[in-house]
Image (cartoon, rainbow, N blue to C red):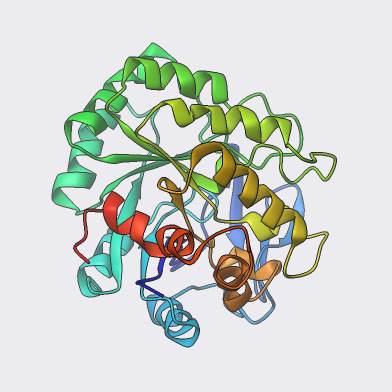
Length: 309
């Protein structure tokens, strides 16, 4: 097995985020967070006593399971921690090979912040989480942001939303398609397979919403990332037959060269162990050849992030 890279991990010094741009979130204890006005919800296992996810903890999980390197992302749910994550990237360059800055596209100086995050703070790209911002991807108001990311040769990472309440800002595939038409050179990573309503167990083969997402394969700079798939299939037990079926559909539709493995650590631990999140692909998915698995588990990420083997 070649180098294994987890393309979606989090370090969280403190929970201080927001949901849908308006609902404050605070960390409680034992894996739970408080959504103001909506109560307490579990989001991690009880072992996360103080809700912090230090880089040292992440590195221990990686060493324990044989994951060589990782990419750090952020989320509005957890809070904006650009300074902290940038420092972690600097201090652990050998393990954390890339990171993504977080910003609110509605800021008047958002495009300038893109340059600062990439050029001054060392982020490889910018992540936006829709609808937790929320905004419309194809609104011309935000075109300067996409233009700046493209100019800086950054990567745009998009979480299209997990919201089960029919939030209109979720699953903006049509809007993303328009964005890509206007900015064909921008590199986009579609996180969590666009989610694509895969949490809905009535979504069965060939997964109609997922097919809409996979049709973005016509744009050669779009990559598809597998993080959180066990969370989308948590009604099952490992090794998640439905998750394997989803991955097979992705592989059949887009080929193997633009699929990235990731976990969404630590929240994935609600559904499975970190080792199981890796073994979902490494030891299962028998339709994949060894070469295919090597690409998905690391080689594709090395190419995307311009690393030498």
